[in-house]
Length: 120
Image (tube, rainbow, N blue to C red; front, side, top):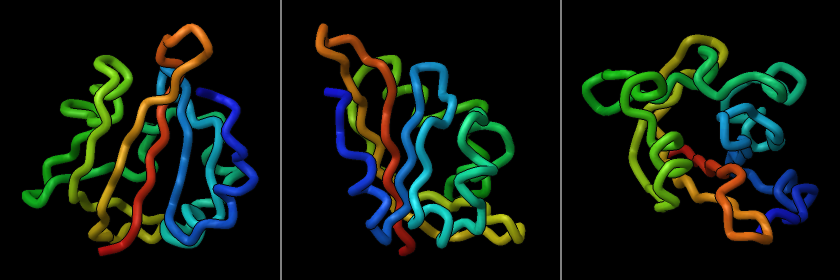
């Protein structure tokens, strides 16, 4: 259910962000800032596919526009875990483990999703 204490997520060293059901970033924690170099002020309000992290698989295929795991979770409600490479602000690809989970409202409708990522 939505109503998570997002202030507690800000204390994590893992990167955590929350998107609405259109993939607009509504929350970006300090761990995400430290890992990626992108500040909260640069990310909140943008779409997660707006050239920020540009998730790629081990072959370098970018996932965000064609095979987005976040979009799949928003559509089917299934959590996902994957190894991916994220692009940081300096243009470096970082190997990360990514976990995506749907967030539901009180009626059971999917209202968004969280992504948690950590360096491998």
